[in-house]
Length: 132
Image 1 (cartoon, one colour):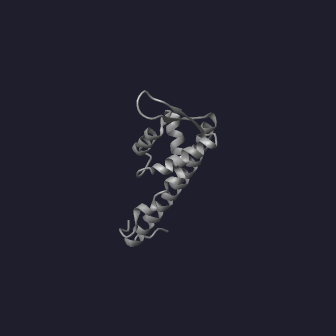
Image 2 (tube, rainbow, N blue to C red):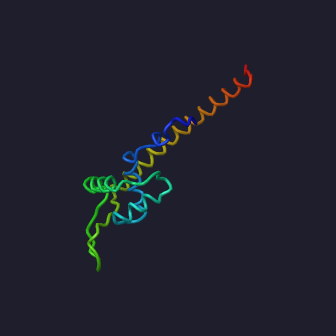
Image 3 (cartoon, helix red, strand yellow):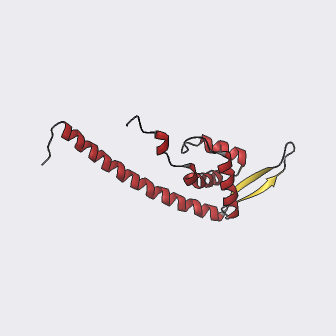
């Protein structure tokens, strides 16, 4: 790849996929905000660190939209913490995200196949191989 291209500019912005990622993590296990951020940062499907403000902004929006619900838990020590859980509507939204991501994956695989054919034809041209 051309070294002059900023590879970080080629990544999908977190704002586009964070809702799906949060829904999946909450489907796996109800979590407090800090724990959820840690799990998000540790996830293999995630690139880069999650911005705390972005995560909480999305959690508030998802709570308002009924995709998740939250309530305050007061522990024996320390301040109360909000626990986030996936709702039935959130499960349905996650399924829609999975369909969308699957469609995008299929399109990317077609793109990569087309690129492979293109790269193969360039190799053949550079090496004087002519196909009838």
